[in-house]
Image (tube, rainbow over all chains, first blue to last red; front, side, top):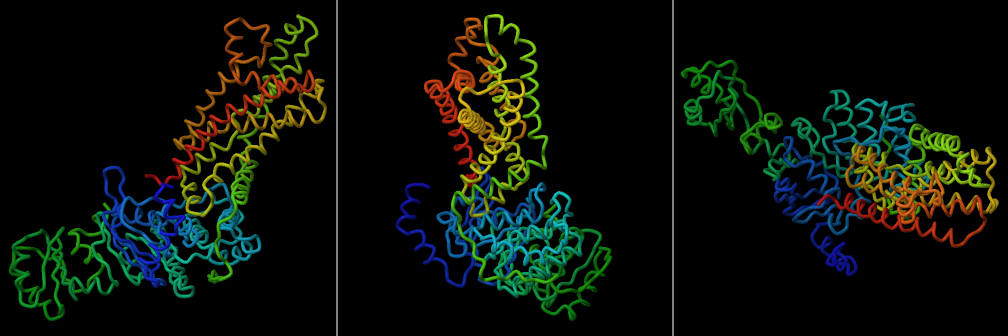
Length: 338
Length: 267
């Protein structure tokens, strides 16, 4: 603790700053949050405002800064600039208070393979200051969530990936946190396990009104779970809103043509058609945005027929979050991952 | 699945340091029976060296007169058992596997992450003294200081073993590398063999005796021997204790600095 930190601590200034800056209905708030790894800026001034009781999705490709953001918010990494308040406490001046109020299930499931599932959960309870009777009661409650039967008394090293994920979630819930951070909770899971985790996240939020902040690189996950989504790319938030708002921001309907090559002239021709908002092409796919897809599908088809391109398919659909990402960053989220 | 995880009576709180140390030590001790190979060598290696040295040198040692070489060698055997025995490799595994980060996400006091492991080490170190003492009793070694002397002997051995753990913990926390932790054993050799562990100082050549004189472990061994062979000798015990404290001041400072660096939230 520096002299300045010590002064703030003993005078209560840190609490006053947190109290003044964080609206009472906000679980997490950041302003201009910066975090570097050497010369690399992983977070370049992130502004977030997560309300209590919402599921907040942080969507972005690998390396966008999602995990770094979560690690700063849950006090594992110190910020290099800006302000971050979690449950009303500054992560820099009051990390101990933050830790008591959050549960964290990080992407790299670190569970200690040499312990049994029960031992791990009991130790977790002890480290959060729960009494033995509380730990026993809590264990019975979260064991229903873990749903791994007798395996709870087996060493974690023998668990499947799905069992480890569920145990990881149970460990994060042992102390009944106000805010739950889930870092890519379904990465690497099979579709059935993924669906089960989604269901649990919804229930935790709905039945306990627990604030849940989840990072994901899966568009459908953010779309299906999150009340609001922040799209992060290159260490900055490039868009934020409900999934519907974000999708509406790129136009109401999309006409997508799979073609044999990209041709800027064709894109310009399509963009110039009446009723068309915009047109873009990438990787043999032309995307046309319009407010009335049904009416514009035929003119687009006719225009394409007059070009030298070979059209493999022509579809009309509503926008996805991938379209939002493409609009904002110029690349598909999947392509960015690669 | 039935979800019943909401419970308003469950509220997290920061525990006392003693509580945190106990929790971390409990986990470390539970792992020991599951990894017996981490302890078994510390039982057999001292017995091996004791028997080999006894067989090789007892007659030479006795040639100079009535000298109880069996008693003389017991401190060597016990120091062999307790030196370098620590949970540092486990700490390395935790750091490497990310479990250390999980612990850092909890409100556990950071010092407890080290003190807890050291408390577990003390339990193991005391337990390791037992087979060596039994071996000594079996060959006829007796303590002139009686049962209280045995207790002081074990306490001094455990203190020495504990202060030596500071080195591997410092390396584990600084590097997170199991290979680097294993390399700490090289500290053991000069500290241990450049002493009168096997041969009385009077029988040494000049340069070796000089080094042994300045080696703090010589004084630890001297204090332990005094409890067996000569009775209560406050001066010898004070020298032994000072040697342990001196090494401990260095090793524990290094471990504390390494812990501080590890938990400083990676600036």
